[in-house]
Length: 487
Image (cartoon, rainbow, N blue to C red; front, side, top):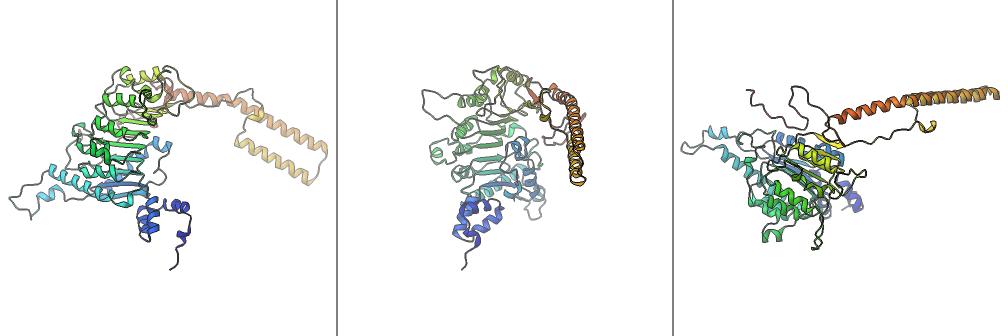
């Protein structure tokens, strides 16, 4: 039996080739031989899984995922090049509630199925499908996982995440789907924090309890995103402590994000205690605490927990020109309306951290001012770059001069006259460009003034891409909700 040509490739080259295959093709390749199965397991590192009632719901979940945010695409996201390659949509279809109630085969004495009972069955089905997929040995080397379901209700699912996926570096749990309007869900189910209930199923991921701490193998997370979860503040703190390499944390509509949690977060990422020899955790680079109703801050004093994250403890009030790469670079409090925007702006003015981007609770985005290098008028003329039209004219005149040399071989006087004319033309172009340069600089300055005039912080600029139109409540990064006033 002949050997496949792909088997003769070096392992490094084979790994790079298999990384670009879709998951279905990669699994088929792993069934061909034992060596190919091992290579397929190593190449299968990213998985984005959506288990929702309809296929179109999974498509909407991927489209509105935080993967396509401007911040993550600028900083480089693992799925931004080809996000569809690692996407899998599983439909958790159940007969609608109306069809169950109108079924002719239903016994008259049998009670009708309520929306709450239907919702419970749907959640159990989604969790069972997720357990059957994530428990396969093929995913043991998975380094990045995104899971879109309604909610976690099965303890087996959290145990699988905590014990069977030790190589995970990026975990995203999305239980918020405001673009889906399911009849079995109560009104405002996706946004109202009343429906966020605490549960002991998070103890497996947080390592709470002797048995959970012993069996926990998920300890190498670098990126964690949780959307709409009832995890408590204590469970959230333990989960972060179990992953000291965490450098990106995004929590949206999470019940455990409160004043106690953020105070602990500032102490945890602050200066290490000299009395204890515990290793210091990796510095946080991206922190997003969005739509967290339990987080309250009315004054600058209630925001001092950010000092250790920004690294401005002893340097308060001084804006460093050189950005500290070890400090927090991106921070967001979008739609955490219990945090006062004025207090946050006052904190930024007093501390002036070297942050790249900050999102205020009202949705405005601030970033560092762009540093333009202005050309000085005292520089020599050769330092001024001519425009495209000027360089074209210069090349045309040079070609004309060369053709004159090759054709008629005119005298030295004519050559000197032509070269002098060319030098005069170049000097004229340079003078015109140097005169027009201040006008361009003035225009650039006016644009910068316009972009920073509405910024609430003096050393930051407002970078909201599209200002809202008059009479329109639509924002580019929001989900369109139905208007209750319109029938």
